[in-house]
Image 1 (spheres, one colour):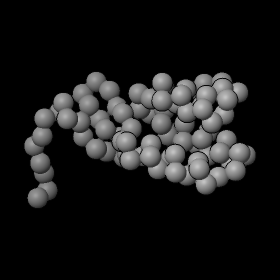
Image 2: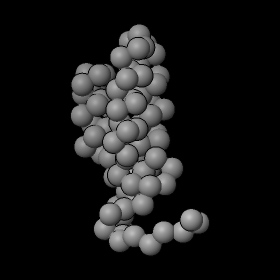
Image 3: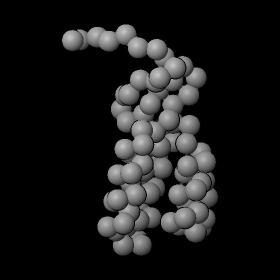
Length: 81
């Protein structure tokens, strides 16, 4: 099947985001994957990895999520971007 009709309120999966008519959220599997990768990295590598991940996550409505992660793993040292 090439197409599927669904209600927009359920959101559409596209490029790692769940896209709704008025906002975009990260898929939960992407957040879980990020936590798993952080657990395997050293402190210096975590900082570099999170900077890249924050750039990706900033395309969605993820301000609170990014702030929570920044405070948890980086101690709130870096400014929000």
